[in-house]
Image (cartoon, rainbow, N blue to C red; front, side):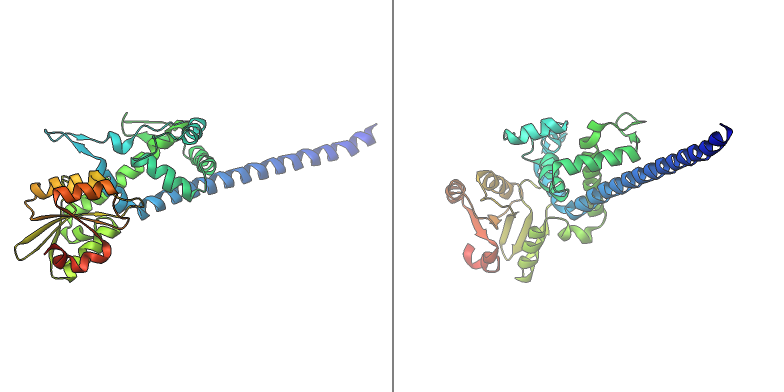
Length: 289
């Protein structure tokens, strides 16, 4: 009996030791997966926002509404998307408009695409949440536990910080004014300046539907630049028409890479807004005359 016990104890000790080692390995592996997933999540988010920061600032500026007293309304920018993953999938399948513009659109069409799907996005978000269980709640002014449903607040906060930082940089350093906006706006700026036009960009806020003001001789062009995938509609025509009056321009011009709807062409003809494509910029003076 004693010999059996003497034989059994080392075996049990070995099994117990092996189980402890395996458990530690498992925990170490799980911790590694969480760290890698968390780092992947935040690095990917920051990278995507950085790559699109000029576009984001431009879209924020487009969607911001200002009342006659100077109060800003950013409801269209922030939107009101569903927060729970199952509701998101349901809204998308039903053709919901909750992701049609602003930060919700950017999240679905740009961020999620970089994660190759909604499921992977939330998988990595959960890893981030596990690694970073507490956050500084800037609204409540306290440190609190990070909840699963905080994902949109987290994304919107990072986007907003990026926009505010870029906006401040533009205001402080006038040398980057012409580089601030969309690539297409920069392209139009450079093309016009190469033709001898004196070109200025309107302020980040309060542009009144005009991106660029180009002057030469007695001409003062109020220009809006559109780099969209779909044909440009009536709204842009109305904006640049009103902007021409505000900026005391001689001509209102809309430049698009995607063409214009028939309705926009009719409205432009009646309101004397000139519609051109990117290839006509170099000949814009002759087109006007």
